[in-house]
Image (cartoon, rainbow, N blue to C red; front, side, top):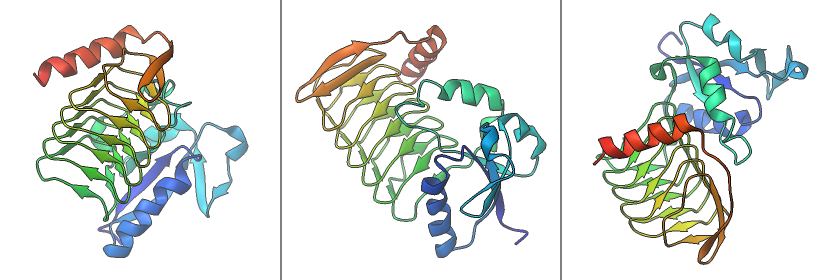
Length: 235
């Protein structure tokens, strides 16, 4: 047991979905010991989720010195609050564990950021680069030479073609298709089943085949600036 990595999960809501990856990894070869969950919902204090104790709120993270954290938050509704959650935790990125299901295919030249979660059946293509805290869910395909910004979620059966760039804290719903070389700005929402064939501005919600912009929200200046810096550093 001493060689196992101790894990604390952030958020009770996504716990059931994410802990299954840990169980499947441990089934192949024991690697993790799940200690508990941190959640700010006071109604959960002292309770358990699937037998796993809720140990406190997010600000209690600094009490756990010898553990890794799993940040599974990444729904469309939570993508706007995710930057605030990360800031509240105030942990170095190396404290977050990256979870990759044994049945995911990750090309050797791909680069997966700290704290990312890759589910069963996903394919991450050659030379793809995923920032920290990304979620790629069942059977999604991230194409070759993609650049995926921090905190982005790509839902089941979504597919991105070669050379796609997706800005930080974006959300691609199920069965989305993104054409070659398309750039999607940060904090965008791509609706279920949409076919994206042209660039999408930051903060936009798009839907349809071909996808059209339905509305647009402002993107915080800090997130826009960080995304532009990421684009510049990757050429």
